[in-house]
Length: 409
Image (cartoon, rainbow, N blue to C red; front, side, top):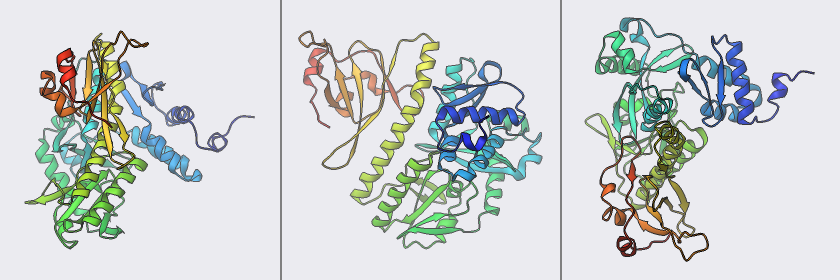
């Protein structure tokens, strides 16, 4: 007896099973060419030289989270959005469908690294502008079945500048943004438009001042579909907002920013809370976001260096939680004699050969980043890309090694 679609997904599928169903759905939907499953990156690849890339992480996450009867609809939605129709031929035709969108800065870097790993030889040209330290502002075209972010080449084809297209997109967003917030915790309100442009409303400062939160509005956009607001005078609400942001990032993915924002002359800018505990929790969230960004890029960097025949170790940003305080500490490993690309972390584990040990390797010495930076000139400037990574070729001398203060987790 053949395996029916509902039997196939009677329980939560493995990533491999989900990829097979996605392949079949693409074929049933009339996709013109063959696709293959890249298990390492959890994506489907097709086209000449792998030009078509369909990442499955978000689709799989949403599929598994949906009630069983709704899962086929979730998959069908993703297939439609991945097979985006052609953009309008002119700016005039596209104008009414333009929307501003906020994305995590690591998204742009992921696309650049993907292109480098494929070895196309073409520089990646995105259609974005910086918004904050960890996010970018992009433009999208909204059609009935998909939201397509626009590349610079699309704007060039239309003969329009980014600023002109952004002005049209903001007008469109403002037209569909009658205030719509709900309280989700004491002192915390959340955008409730449910239209995929929640985070984009951070561009409309007047919406937040109308809320009368009891002080200046403090805003977070932890994921694409979550926009949270609290008062600058309410530390308890800010802590609750941070806890919600952390939960949404973990449960939903599609993260954008770990920052808090306030408004200056109608523009959202990074906000440093006055309360010490709020500051500490905000730093914890930043570390979680950065560790995830570092991890998502490691395989792409490994592939890019392998293609370029560069022997370099891409170190991992790892997080440990202190048992006494619950605080998170980030660390990376640097081994003597190993050309290393090191993430910016709290502590660096220095490892050097030791002829007296059974393994031939001495015990790691943990040193603080700031202490190491004063001794290593290569830590003065980072490599291209985001988040910051540092190319380290010259391990500390024995004298430097011995002079560095040892730290503990």
